[in-house]
Length: 165
Image (cartoon, rainbow, N blue to C red; front, side):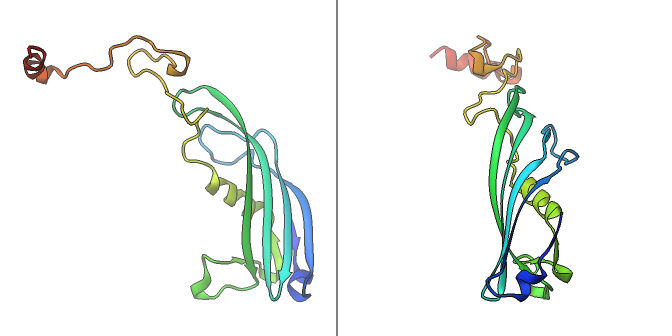
């Protein structure tokens, strides 16, 4: 959605509030997928000469846990804030978002914000134990009984010295 912010930039204390949906079905997120559009509440308001853009987004993300490969569906909610300007100077590139001709592509901005905010590892839970490297059992469901501490065959002679003590 292209948001026209001319009145917000030119009139003090002016504001624009919009509810929108962002289609992220084609976003590159690895194994994660957005099955429904992202819901966003957007507000742009003039504060004594600068325009503040805030967005509250919520969405459900479907993914396979990066440790145990279990299918997971989790709700996410993020808040984003940016300062908008009509033209960037050379030294202000990372601090501000440019809205040339008083127009802002909110879909592109929110898509970038969401993809940057998503965790690099998507887990079913923080304490996920993952899979047994030997038999492949999901360790969240219980122990598998595998002996995981196998001695490197090159060090077997040294291991025998330790077991005799």
